[in-house]
Length: 81
Image 1 (cartoon, rainbow, N blue to C red):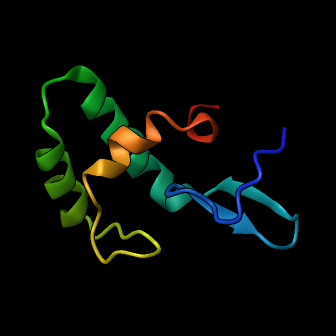
Image 2 (tube, rainbow, N blue to C red):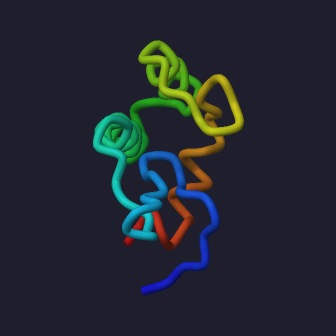
């Protein structure tokens, strides 16, 4: 299924050889954990952001992990697939 994405979302990488978007095995485990924490309702986004930033997980544009990324990604069809 094609999603028409130019850049891979956080937790994925652009695989230039296969010409597809693939799971980034290093970052995916942290992103998965962030979503699991968010899903419990026990952690506010600010706390999740603080935990992820302590692991030095960076986005392509930002030097730190923005808290909005979890709520945005939870609505993104590609991430949910």
